[in-house]
Amino acid sequence: MNAKVYKLPKKKECPSCAFEVGENETHCTICNYEFPQKKNYDWRVVTAIILIVVLSYFLTGSF
Ligand SMILES: [Zn+2]
Image (cartoon, rainbow, N blue to C red; front, side, top):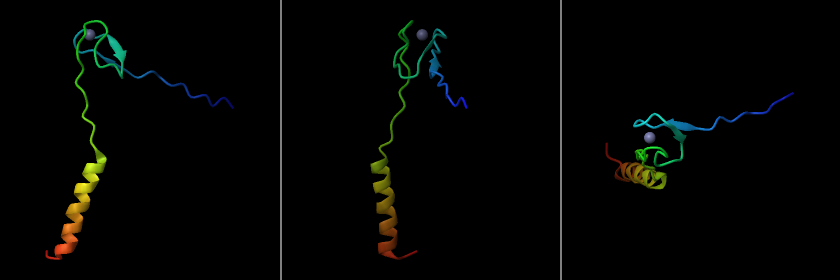
């Protein structure tokens, strides 16, 4: 069986000049358009906040 998986290179289109640049690029290679950066959630902080809320709920015991 030929089970080769062909990976397509991920690309995004520049909204300024419609040129396709690599997904990891922060700037367009043609017009130097700056792509908006996705903010990375710090999941440890989110988990900690959820834990504190849940713990305080159980500790207070009041509804
Ligand atoms: Zn561009």
